[in-house]
Image (cartoon, rainbow, N blue to C red; front, top):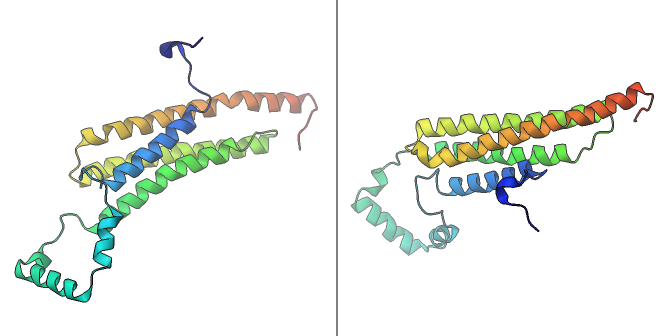
Length: 187
């Protein structure tokens, strides 16, 4: 017998599943140049340019020269898009990595508890940094804020879930303190 969806509680690892979905959606967004393009860049398209022989390259250069295509500059320099891409990708990656590292520690002492707490905090900080970076991208690039609102909502949800996970760990800290006060010490 299953439980009605509205009556279900969140999974114990909901923060982890949400982080993975967030990372996947951010990667897809970056492949579409922050939503400014509808299609994902294709590596096969670039392979054709790399395999071009010298005669074809000369023909292409002459076409570019004839129509002054070489003088057309992109509205947004590639280094700026690349910087944004790298930043957002690394921050979304860091959230998942900090969660995995923190979850790998089951604290048996206050030292381990503090290590776990630091990693949980780092994941939360990465969410905050990701939000700031997204807001900066919206302010610079001609991306409609509505397109990125779902991503921002997912980041905020992740931040909330991580804070709740961190708070739930206070029970572990209380158990450790009780055992230390009762003379049972962990190494």
